[in-house]
Length: 174
Image (cartoon, rainbow, N blue to C red; front, side, top):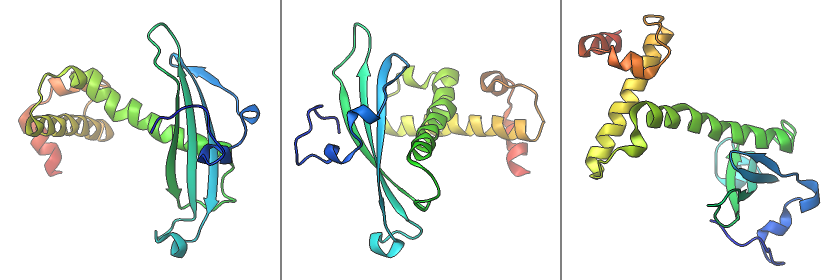
């Protein structure tokens, strides 16, 4: 989806707010800026029940540092059940960013850091899927035990080391 940063007159990038209206943000070793364009629709027009808006988010990213790659300029599309008056552009951008941040820092981070998923050398498709399922099950059991206040171990790694098959099966049966 990445493309050059020189939009031409026929490019959809020209529909977004101009450069002067959007500030760059610095974090995680990069500069980023995001712009939003929205289109109000009805569910009947779009054919999606409950869809009241189509959102386009333009994300420009410049990696910093010695090993930085080329700048990227992407457009991602979203649909929402929120009506146009419900949120301003900044709030919608924050909602979208928070959604992906929660995914990245929630499950993915814990699967990678706790279980070393990215470093796993397994490459057979079926085995990869089985391991991902087992990792998700272990994290789910840990969260279930925390929610039921049956363990006080905040770390999934520590909680999983203390897990026995019998305890896991008993939690799932409740």
